[in-house]
Amino acid sequence: MVNAIKYFKSSLWSAINSSNPEEQERAEAEWRENDKQYWAEYSKLEDRLDKELFEFFRTFSFHDYDLKEYKIVQSQHNDKKIVDLSIVVTGASDEWILKYNNISRVGITMEPSDRLGHRGFDDWGYDELLIVDEKTLSHEILFASGAELLVHFPYKGLIVKQN
Picture 1 (cartoon, rainbow, N blue to C red):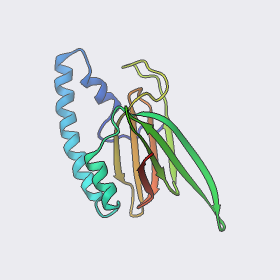
Picture 2: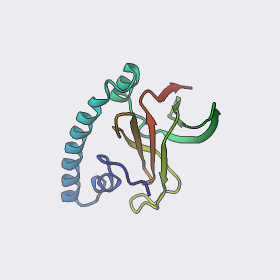
Picture 3: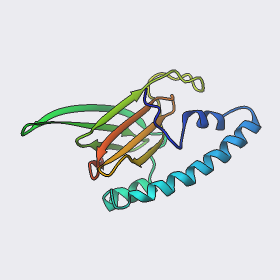
Picture 4: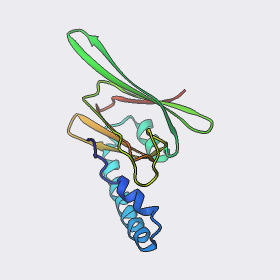
């Protein structure tokens, strides 16, 4: 089980959409605080991502994009086996490819969502780019279905381009 989302948790997202106004208010206040904490954490990535990519994730969101495809490819480089992951997401009028090179960890959790009852991944909800250690970053994605995708990759190991 992945359950790695630290700030934008499925349970909190569900509470924001609760029919109970008190629960919504509590969840929205917690969300705002988590949002502040996340962006403070994100600012630490400035020296660990390419400048364009850092700015891209600071200003652009894949919220409500559809996951079209994810592909894991293993290749051989000299005596090492390298594993890459690519994700294709589509919006109303555009398509993007996120390519994670030389990943060290990948995890997918797909559990039924008591909130929406959708199957599969559904829409991209929220994501977090975080520091794992001196050499590794993590991208954690929460989908509207409650599914989560976690990818660990080396600094400068992520490429995002419009298709």
